[in-house]
Image 1 (spheres, rainbow, N blue to C red):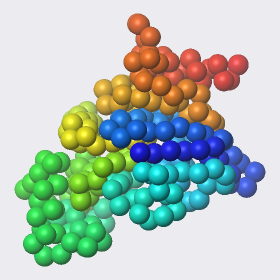
Image 2 (image 1 turned 180 degrees about the vertical axis):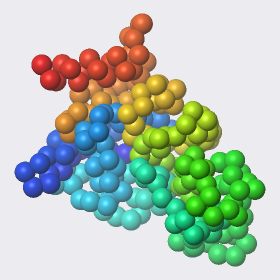
Image 3 (image 1 turned 90 degrees about the vertical axis):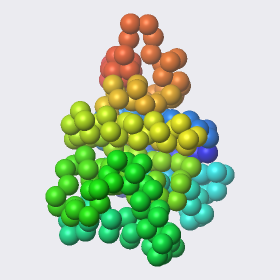
Length: 237
């Protein structure tokens, strides 16, 4: 579904992403791991064509990401997702529906469908200013799930959430996976990645150190955190 071929991104003399190549298959739940500043969000921004690569090629379903057709079946939740405080959850979702070309009864029906998926039915008329961070994140996921996307790209979706909020987001992701969806998750919360994803890549200073199934990466009596620290420390020797 996703393919990166020798992708680099330079900002002046600074290289944020350095010759990265990997693929993500249909139905795969993939985590891109790394400390802050490793280049995770830069890769997401290139996948969504917010910024162009300096070198290399990125495709979704074999369509170059510079072509808007590549994003027709993609849902996205940004790091530090924001909802205008004066909008209710319902109003926010109806705006998304409008951007998708849905109006009237179709827009209302789709909004109600995704609200139920994220357990926000009955809360949709409250203003965003009254929502907790977890509620705002669920509304962001609802917006990303509109139109039944095949691919969800989630950039630090559980950062700053309390344990209940983390559990709720995990359940939404698990339900999406059960329906055959593909997930790309950027995170530095490694214990959650182990519960949510099948494969992972460790990114450090813009380079992929390893990409494999989590089962293959994590050895007996190890955690994903142990593996991550080992690879990063090796790079710093």
